[in-house]
Length: 436
Image 1 (tube, helix red, strand yellow):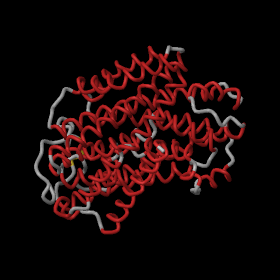
Image 2 (image 1 turned 180 degrees about the horizontal axis):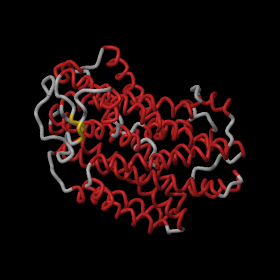
Image 3 (image 1 turned 120 degrees about the horizontal axis):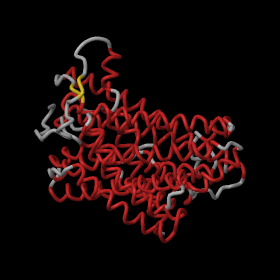
């Protein structure tokens, strides 16, 4: 422990310090030992909620929102690096650190906010998986939503086989998603000059309420609040040396791991938006915000029968991957904030139940179109929860008494607070537009 951070039971106790890290030898061997947590975090940055916002954004505005995808990914890299550093420096995850820092009332409020974010995220996973099952196997949406309740058994099996095997499973699914979209992009023939122009932000992103709504949805789908809690915990699965030098090296390795993984997530998110822009927007189909519509239109518009299958297969992989990390985040949050130990199966069932109920209601009343709208709305909810995770994270990592020698530098502190201010400002702007 560094600084004045209090002693707490280890986060994710059974997996805590379960992955060995070489004490000596080549740097790349240590980097390989640290590779893994970043990819579990990156999963949350390419879940079905991302798909809904990216498809809607690319269809409606072409490549214009690529700048939002890029900026939000860069913000995510910085915030996730801070989360990893917090866990390494203090031995606490973000939820435990909040419990040790704030009053019971503040902690309860932060816990409620975080739970809302996790349920919103889980809702996106439920709907995305159900839509994928419907597209691939013609399974009714309601049945697909109910079927997602059983994925708890998959997660429990993976957790019981060891943290490294869970990470390997996630990485394999990420490679499936990447391969599918690499093929899709090759088929869609995007205009790369226009793609480059889309990376440059424009004023219309803020001045156009509908564009701003999608932009904030993209930010909410990219910079996920529960991932900050998750990363600060799972980075502690590595058995690094608990010395000042060991912690500094661990922070460096964890930052490299998460930055590489999040760059991969950036490529996936950009690919989804580019695919929608180069396939739908250029053809005048600016109304495509439904994942099922995107699936059915890809084949005739790209002239390749495999296009829709790849799209649905990647969506299913994304939904299952996000389920795993959502489970871990939920466990970390409830144990950290409430010091309440729940069996992982019970925790998962509670979270999934809270997501299944609204999903079933929407699917029955509004069908697939309503499901996709709910997907986008869930990402806006996530974005609105961001400040309640980001502000405590920045405050704690900038506190020398808490972090010791791993405290943020003045430049990093200023940058982190600027990021927090931008996120809060965007959210306030959205609220003004929604309730004006």
